[in-house]
Length: 98
Image (cartoon, rainbow, N blue to C red; front, side, top):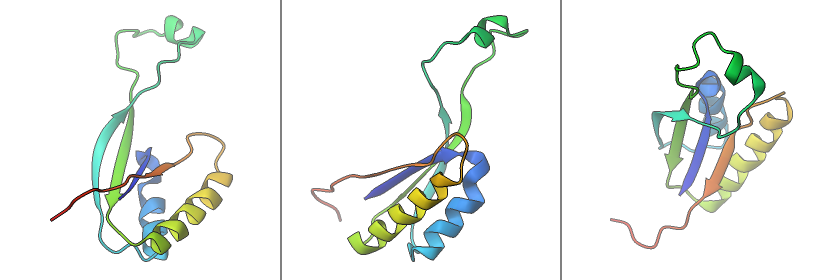
């Protein structure tokens, strides 16, 4: 199983990468991304009680290792073009499935 997380701004790009890697069946859902970092700007905010999460997405797919490897290469290349908020991906072993 491959899991991908990214900020929601990258949704169309990730969909294209999945298509290019021939990952044809996957699921996606909205999540809130958080970092536990504190910086001076957080304390100077006009509205410090507002949540600091960022709108993010999580994709997952059960697919063959060659497609996942290809997807990882595409994500690595894509991340090289970004100034911040890189796409994260991980492969998780599945012991059983039906």
